[in-house]
Length: 389
Ligand SMILES: [Zn+2]
Ligand SMILES: [Zn+2]
Image (cartoon, rainbow, N blue to C red; front, side, top):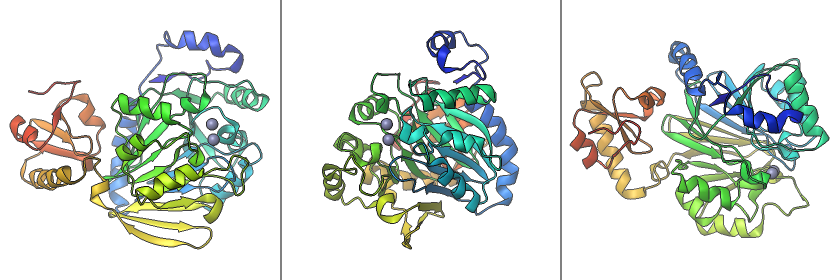
């Protein structure tokens, strides 16, 4: 985790990238947020029916997604230059007075263009900015980074597998190395709440999707925010299979110049019976995940209750479905205190109980085991970090 406030300005970008390796103030988000989560735990228990809400704000061609859990908020992107006010209006209408995190997936103007107006919004206090080390050379970008620098925001440059707790939701990040094609520099966010999940892929195209899969980042999700506004260059078949989504969200402008979403993408989604919810057709889309249900509402009046299908809650489909029902029984019978091992329900990875990774897992995602063999028999694989035996 790279967390360097102030050190960042566009003109110093290159020098800064070199300096980052020596930036020793770096603290991990997981450390920071695990403290936060301890504090939040008590609040959380009182607001039992919190849920996790995704707002895909209709800002025309571009992305702007608000995530909300237990009165904590993350804004992922803010649309094009000129769309920031629309985002501000949305925040106002939803009584959002603070953004715990403003995340810029990658430096393309349809993602960062409106961010300056959001940061300047006096009614919404932004606490942390999360971004990649990829830079742009446009004036709008320069103005944005100058402002971030001038106002001394806490800027976080995450690395792959860093996690952020947003209330009871755990956000896991994938951060690719900086490459020439800025789309493939997109920070990918996978959100998990009470066993339900969603993945937001920025403008990642098939080359980044391949890296994500090669590096074993868990992408499985009930909800897929389609990469790059539904472009044919994203949502490769392999990636779709790994995500195994139940529904998809596409953010694009009506009649956009790029022809997004491309017909090839629509075809691929239709082939796997993946429903599409598009901002160009439906306006802003809100999905609330709670009690194993997705409640979906849109500006154009669509309202749906979709039951979480467990075959989508684990990418390994049927066999793992059986396994997970077994593990949930085990969870009840294995005493938390006497357990020696803790499994991650979603990734099916087994850790020693005292492994630091266990501290970062949400309680809903933990399965306790007293015996190693029992866990292995249920399809768990030993973690590389703590190597349980
Ligand atoms: Zn874009
Ligand atoms: Zn882009």
